[in-house]
Length: 414
Image (cartoon, rainbow, N blue to C red; front, side, top):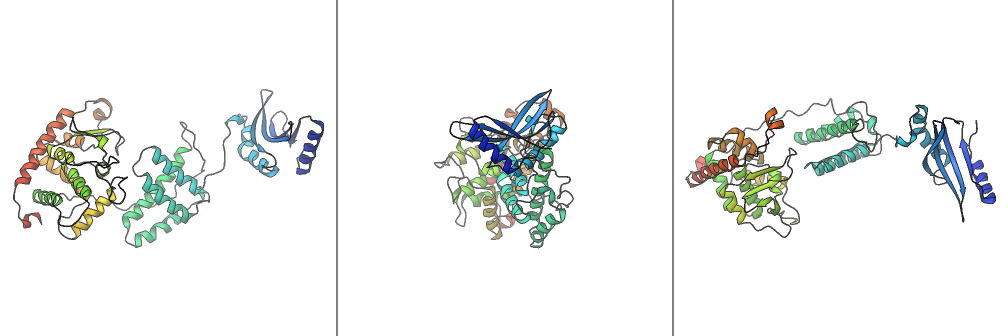
């Protein structure tokens, strides 16, 4: 067996430089199958040395470049050849299909999953990336992802849980579980090529129990709805005006807080009195007609120079976040000046009061962009239901105007 050495390589380079004739050095046996070779070529002012994986298919050699000597050492070339090419050659598969076979690290996995969320237009991608970056630092960003054990995940979750942050602990568990699930599926997805192989045998977060979900039931009764709406019109404490307007639009439309908070002027069709989203949480476009009360409110809003209807108080170049609206409402309800209510409670309130107004559940679901699971809706029905939604919003507008004309006592609103 002919085995290369650094001495033999240096001697061959000198020969090529002196003779001007190309040489090929072979590492080990493999004629008729394939092996690692070093191609040494004379140039006008220098000699080039290129590592190649060589394979014979149907009696003809094919090659794939690995790197250049000496920037890639003999040991590194051998390691790369054994890792990415030798097995393909033994199996008779073309080395042209070879990929980097190094197993992915924790950092590779978490960064890859966050990027997957971003390119998929998932609204949670920034939050997930930030959370996973912290977890990667704790677990060890440069260690192999397949080495992480379930106990290591629970060791991260337990302190969060013991601080009383149960929801946060469950979010962290969910991020890790989803990231590992993505990694296991992506490298076996025949429809695409995963940028990194992970070789994960089991998801370390799969067996960790989830925090029991608390199904909300809170919704604002008539008097509470009026009390909150009137307070937002004339707050008793200083607040950033766009925040109060955003919450009133939430109350009047029943939409998801993320979609209202990030509302841009381009999404408001003044002539048609519509709000339009190209893509939403359920991956579908969504358009709703507006009740007259919402139109009046939006017409009174001047979008800032960045086009946001509800800009952030700290950075006008960005819209207010759903978390900021949540915190703003939390502070006010803790003082007792408004009813106890969360953003999701407002969405539930619209669903309930719109039903009280006489709007069918099907149309309420369509206005709120809930995913309809029946076969007819998913696969066949392509009607937009805009006339029905317009009629529903007219009914809702009339219902709210009647509510706002009522005089409720403080006791009624409490």
